[in-house]
Length: 325
Image 1 (cartoon, rainbow, N blue to C red):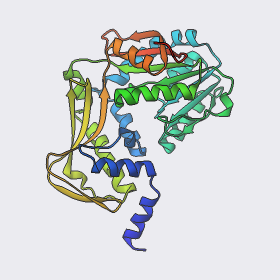
Image 2 (cartoon, rainbow, N blue to C red):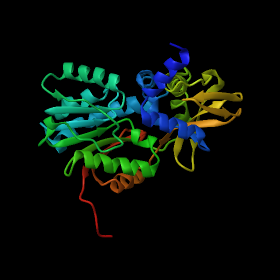
Image 3 (cartoon, rainbow, N blue to C red):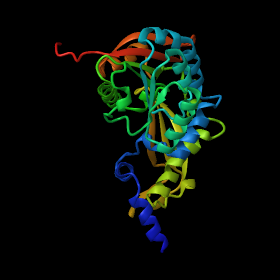
Image 4 (cartoon, rainbow, N blue to C red):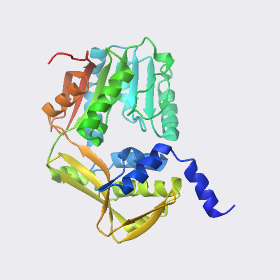
């Protein structure tokens, strides 16, 4: 079998949505590829390394806050329900919540199937009395919950300020989708990163060890592997910058020299200095976050933040859709 036949076969097995987003994103101006495609197995592993970096304050800050407030969450939501985690990843923070709320079931949802199943096995081993029912899928779309949690109260869990990766309009759409997936009367525990000094923010997305750079560049490796790409990865560098007007960190891949390559048989060329926008991480003030949740159909019942006001956790309930002004 010829090499191009093998490559064509690999491309034909790729996720059609991944192919469409990459091809459309590379053809667009400005070029942009959605951040959700970072998370193949290698990307998921690199992100877990990022969360342990000294510069990356969100994970350790949120974890400490979660340890502190989980008993209060349990009192608010009650025991014996189902915890549904959107974008569960390694489920590293999940045991903190599960120990406190004592659910009957845990439903991790993630787009990276191999990583999801490995994490689910780990949670099942730690919590043998909890029914663990993983769902492989894109939580940006409405999902059917496992039959095993029918009739149980539901607590959605969305840590890590992942909501910040979306533009505000898309974030509102996601919150509405979560509300639809969880159902009327459900609760949501969500982590949201605060606006703060760029001197603290930027290093969290451009660490000294270069792990975040490898995470960003891995997207190009994935394109090459899954879409028969010929992108010279060494022709790009990782860039992280603070956009004060839009209150967000922006991650990009910048060409350090002119490059020409193919993806899925289509040719592209990028001049030196041009970029591919790969991720945003929006930051929110307290009032902004509450407004965002309200627009998505959630009513905040509790809010907690750390002593330095770096990060916040919100507990909210799915509220009836308002028809009056």
